Length: 183
Length: 445
Image 1 (tube, chains in turn purple, blue):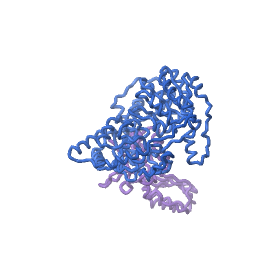
Image 2: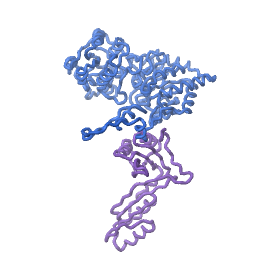
Image 3: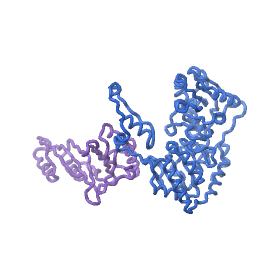
Image 4: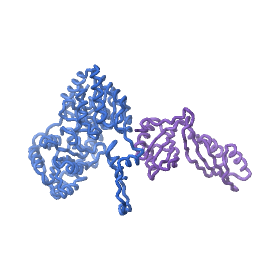
């Protein structure tokens, strides 16, 4: 069993919520800005917002704060980028979806089903030698579940990357980045 | 709509070129004519709202720093020209009686003949401009970006200076050097506000700190470290600096100068004296070899009333000389001075000084191509100059020809180097002076 560290929950990760115009080529421009500076995007989720003219890109990136400030400023220079907020993980709700196919003989299948139940996951498909489960939740929870599944042998695993919104309580202010919004 | 958007983006905010990629199937399609209103254009760009007006509290803070500074320097960049702020800049400089350095992109934004002008700072700037920045206690950066050619090694750049940074692009704030007072806005609007604020403060009985000691220190450097080259003895090869001096001396008023990239570019910036804005066209940080001839053609089309000189090296000239055919066909008469030292001179200079004279791929032939014949083949007048006494008559002849383009090939000394020089990776305090000025180094304090 490999001891993969739960890197998704490390504090040096920053979550950027980037509101962009919903048109072709925007994602390429946004992601190439990170690539040009040699920063790996940890996860990325894109989908239209309530207004179909705009999409929200949720980017998780592992960068120190000072280069991040420069990246955010450069991002904001892109004409198609309308707004950037950095979400503080303590003040936002994050969700992610994971699907995994686990190799498991029929006599041990019960254990995996039980695990999925404990984590409130779903059984998507069952075969003679394998089972496919899904789990939605906070990235930490997904990390834990993934860790436990590893003991059985993961055939395939896919995570969506997180999406996030600010929490609704009084302290749930997004932090619009300095100079992140002109006008 | 896209065309209107492109023009809006190109001419506002931090202005610059916009590429419109039109696929061939679009080109061949019919469309109905449609001209969006200004409001529609703005509405279509929800993510583009450049801030032009500086923050009033920041401007007050800047004014306060300026009045308190004992060793201020105005560090002026190309943004001042983009913002059409040369007149306002002059008002500010004279109001606070503060020395001005103009970067490569800002040459002409402040008159070189003005007593407050120190000229160009940076890697090949003059010793006074470099040192004044190093020793200042306040750098007032107007539309410049702390480029590495200005700062040298950033950690040793102007260590005691507070920074006021005026730039329309928020991404420039804090990119290289963290400003004490960042002001995001258009240079002209911000400088106007600064002037107004300072005048009000002075009217309210506040006084500017005494900067006379600083200014006498600065003028001391100016006396000790004028730009210098050793003139050639009779019979020796021409000096490119001498050619530049003569070109400037004989140029009609208002002449526009364009240059390529390399030694000739630095000599142009150093030895030409710029008196008015928009008389210097340069590719700056893009380092575009071959820039001068296309730029000169453009300048001449825009300003047919002006004489336009392109100063080029033999390396640069061989990259874009063919555009002279366009100049001839379209009857756009420009003048070209090729400083032919048969080398890629700046690269050669680096290889000589920093790579133990291991010259690699920098030598070009002094004889080939034959620049005079080449010029003539493209419908231009070609002139070759090999000795100092031929320089003036050749330039005078070129200036008198207005019905076609002229190319003068100056055969210049290949061994000449650009000084002063701050080697790459070194701090500005380590500036290499012209060897003949080295004995005065102690005065650079």
